Amino acid sequence: MPVELSFQAILYIVAGVVLGWFLSFIRTRFEVAAHKKELREYKGHLDRQMKVTSEGTMALERELYDLKKVNENLRISIQTLSQKPGRSELKLLNIYDSTIRKMMLKAPGFSGAWEVSLQEAENAYLESEKGFKAIVRKVFGSSLIGNLKRNENENNLEVSDKKDTTKGN
Image 1 (tube, rainbow, N blue to C red):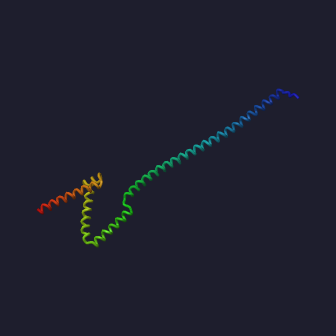
Image 2: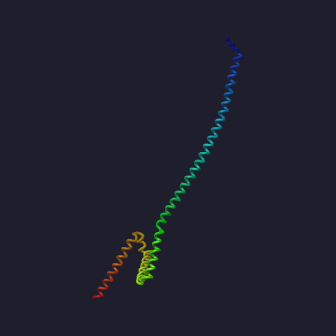
Image 3: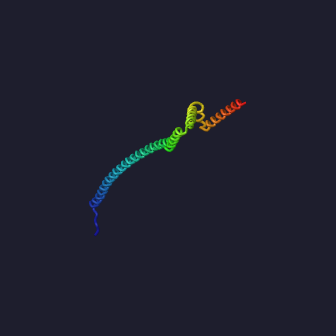
């Protein structure tokens, strides 16, 4: 059975193909528009997410910087506090103070010698806090001051020994 194709049949076939292509084109346009809309939403979401992440990162960096500053301040405070006398040194100081007071009460000779030594030490400390000795102690430490005092005491002893020997003759 041969199929006869007439002009009208061919026209209907071509019109059907064109109509199918046109409907397919419109459907594709709607899908592309939907995909573009979805892509814009994803881009907007990604943009918001990146802003939030960057703000979070910046906040963490600021917090890290602040914590580093606090850490450095605490390190300096610990170093400063470690140079101050601790509880054990204060305890030992109080024990020595109590012992000295008891010795002053119990041993009559100790009190006078102690008071003289205490006044000499206080005067030496006051002298070392001002003037040339303070500068020398800051630069060279207390060992140089101790050497200067020993030399001064030796010179005083030599002078007094010379006076004693001249008086004896």
